[in-house]
Amino acid sequence: MLTIDLRGRNALVTGASRGIGRAIAAQLAEAGARVAAHYSTHAIAPADFPGQVQAFQADLASPGQARDLFRRVAREFSGLDILVNNAGFALDSPLELDDDRWLADWQGIMAVNLTACGILCREAVRHFQGRGGGRIINIASRAAFRGDVPAYLAYAASKGGVVSLTRSLARGFGKDNIQAFVIAPGFTRTQMAQQFIDLHGEDLVLKDIALERLTEPGDIAPTVAFLASGLADHATGSTIDINAASYVH
View 1 (cartoon, rainbow, N blue to C red):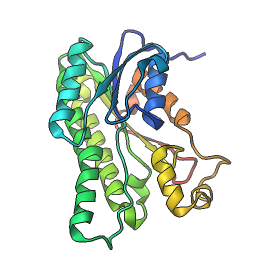
View 2: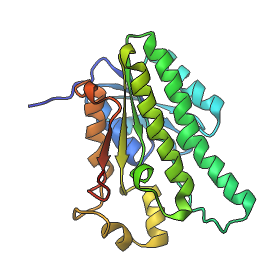
View 3: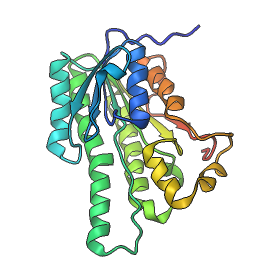
View 4: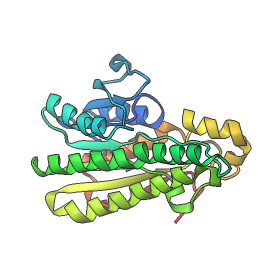
């Protein structure tokens, strides 16, 4: 029986206060990792998690706070081995909005979903190079590959950038024993997905998948733990689709 053992490893998971990030943080902690669980506005109670979890606050829309988050965790944990970039959000931002509002939506989504991810990846690479390696797991979306509805142009574009970023890291730093992976979920039962469902209806979501139920955060977290373990290092640069066959490529 395959057992994921992350004892002795330190991980940072962004956007860990709820949804997919919360499930990932719990899974890594249950496997024995010491986990820095990042949040922005929804505070985290470490006692609600198994194992060793410590909460860290930062507004990832601020480049300085994104950079300082990694450095603060690395300092307090005496090093990091795993980075999971999960934090992200989407807005219903139709093209009919006035110019300033549409542009503000675009810039806000890019700041958190892509720019902060890039900053944290840069910090991770430089840190891992001094520690003999490490693993980066970036949460993208099926929207990076199949696109999204017009009101979610910025979200799809940001996640496409995450995929290209991750592939470049894998190609550029493999010789430093740094592996980078993408997880591309489809619709997952989270608060962010619920906002879309409320606007467009759950039938639109369910008819698009091949399975009987919507994907849950707990369906994604075990794959992240597997990639973090080192058992799949030769898959570096790859994307794993967890979308109930709603997009297969």
